[in-house]
Length: 75
Image 1 (cartoon, rainbow, N blue to C red):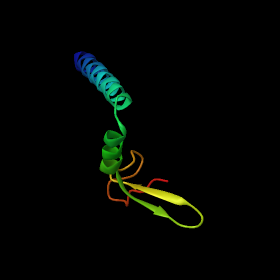
Image 2 (image 1 turned 90 degrees about the horizontal axis):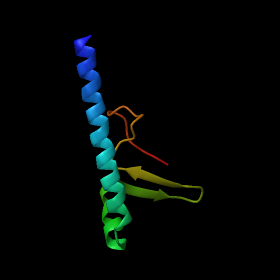
Image 3 (image 1 turned 135 degrees about the horizontal axis):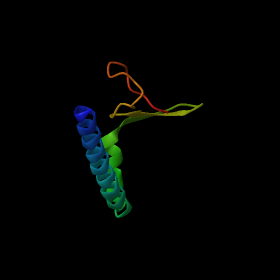
């Protein structure tokens, strides 16, 4: 029981830290100028593929639902 309570406390602390970090990121993004936004896009987007039928964005950061070994593509 003590171990479960300790794990729950650590998880609660982690969630709180992530919420704080998220709030800081959102606030920082809201204050970005055009150049800052372009830098972030260039950081997370590997390439954009365009053809007659669709546009596909290939991200540098893998989506959460994909296993790490797969080719990471998002549309």
